[in-house]
Length: 279
Image (tube, rainbow, N blue to C red):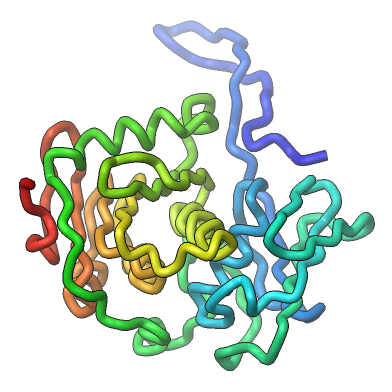
């Protein structure tokens, strides 16, 4: 049985000088062991759910796979309760919190070492800054997006965050088309995990690169979010929080439109302003 993303519990709450007992919910955080052809590759701290998408999105970001055709099958823990029409999935009864990805051919990129990832680690297999640029290509010019539509996407993102509403402790990544309609939305305790899940969904659906879409991320825009979204061909990344200096530098280097502080009816553009034009 799949584990709840926000299990309930009883807590003691202090307010206005008094103690009370109350129900509450907290975000589930558990390790997911990722194996490649039966060999341990990474341990990722994540919120259970969409583990197949997370595994494939991470392998895509690391340059190990480029499409679902690179995957011959997956073995996943039975308690996850996940199936997928586009790849062969075998539920395993003995292992817990595991996904084993079987490749159809040799990895496209040499695997340097085993990776240990916390919920804050987004580019966990890289050893050098330059290595983060593997398989990245400069994004082509266009398309144009209406800047007036951007602020409303935050409300759409929040309205799709069911677990966040119960816990206040989860990040989200939402992929939208140019009209502002949701293509995919995923939650996770790690903002980069949420992006990997979205990219994994696109990979399974054969929709990469996502050249006509934009990504909205809760929290800040770190280097790893830019790297993952550029790798997926996403031309516009908008974050509710601030970008880092490395995020701005990478977005400018690879011609991605980077938006930060997307709040209310305002936002800042740090790179690629030419894509934001009123039509």
